[in-house]
Length: 124
Image 1: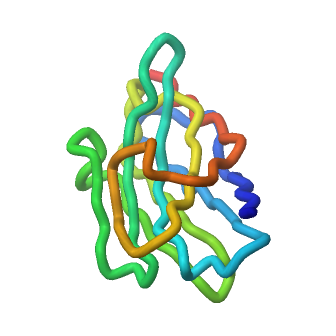
Image 2: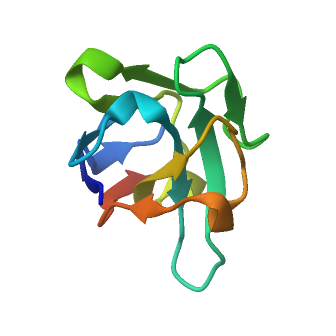
């Protein structure tokens, strides 16, 4: 089992920045590819970003490319999502997820473990 705990969400004005963190426990963190997803009310869960086990491969949704950066620190068992130039449409709870194995994926059904989420609200 892997436990994932997100933090860093909050309320920010449009154009502002936030950094989300997700800390893992229970298994060796470096064996998991990691992803961030979000799900606004009334909408389907949406892929945001993903990173490979060693950090060399990173994927982004088109809607966040150039504004968000995913990174990880395996020594700290933590994955980060740096969010800049935030827009009201970025408002949602954000979830981190862990996928066993080497494959980095945008598909949420490939992730094995999920955190409880942290709310990001961007005001206009």
